[in-house]
Image (cartoon, rainbow, N blue to C red; front, side):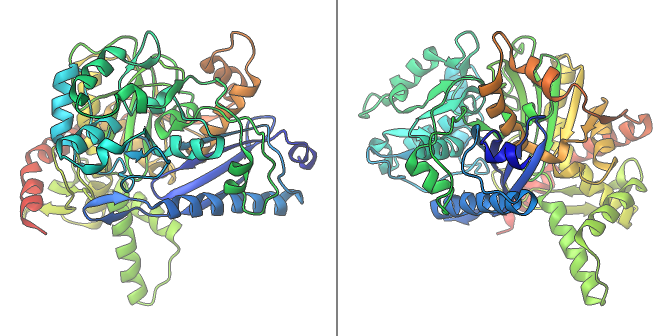
Length: 526
């Protein structure tokens, strides 16, 4: 492996998640051979969830340096050259730049539920669902708000697109990431020109048109430039990394999740459950109706995907586990965080199928699907509820998937979408079987978790970079993944449990009725 890395044959993927930036280096067999990471958190500044540019670059540089350190410790070699690099990040959000490349307003992340008016008006204009998180919704909301910076926009992109631009000089996006900015025409696999023309009618008084400020759309496998000398210095502050490394199209965390779970073929799907949770199914055809709860995005190759995206998943669960750790510490009991999490999950298994009439709402931030613009985490019960630790733990885990279930039911039940297989990955599945089984019960379908599930989006991004440089003539992305990555992969599939499915359905009906309680908390608690 030392010679492999030394000769510059390894491939690197880096993903900016909501709470962690992760780098994964892969070898000839596509398996990870080294990794690095950097933990970070978004900040609520003047009512906007954001990360500063300084945090972005410091985080990337620390993540890469941790990777280089891991390589040095494992193989006693310095990274000077790579076969390819790919960058991905949490999708959507708003990054607008002027003609000098200066950021006009702080980065507005996907977590902001502040574009309801724009979302509703654009959905009606296009007859196409435009979620609040999408970049175009943020842009139009800024226009509706009369924000002064709008007239000065020369380029708009996402976090992944920004990183790629600064490291390569290329203003491009992978089609999957681009589909979270603006609708994609599935025939051309580019931005929808009819809808661009419709939007341009709204910008007649501005000195730009939408098509002039959007990045170029590329497909998986396309050449997206190379790492420049300036980019190499930005990435590797030690100066050891050489420029000229091929870069693949930057993708979003949805696309890398599809790659990491072999879920790019029609009828396949995946659920990514971490700080946020989203479920995706590759569609055979367009949905029959416009559903605001369903994002229509694409695979990295441009195939249509129905996605249910929920802003909240494990953040409230994490807060409760930390609270219990504090309680134990106060009693003089020291327990490791992995053991605490495992205990929480395993106790949840003992809870009643319907959680004993205990309700929890995990809304740390707003939730678009249920119409909450801000979050107020809640625990609600009646005096007669069976309130014990297993039921509380189970309700907390149920809550991580409740909004997802509401959205997926629209696709799988109301629209009758075909689903052959679905794979789970992300932090919710770290404890063996528990999160996986609850997911299977929630969606009433078998759920598979692969041995590689813990590698996540950074590994998926490395696979996309590897595909770009190693694809054979006529080899599609799904062929590459099926034959060269997952041919010998092992995983575990859990079937839904009928009594637990029924219990989750009882819970979700109470959950829907109880949204009035969440609304009251949003309206009254500052």
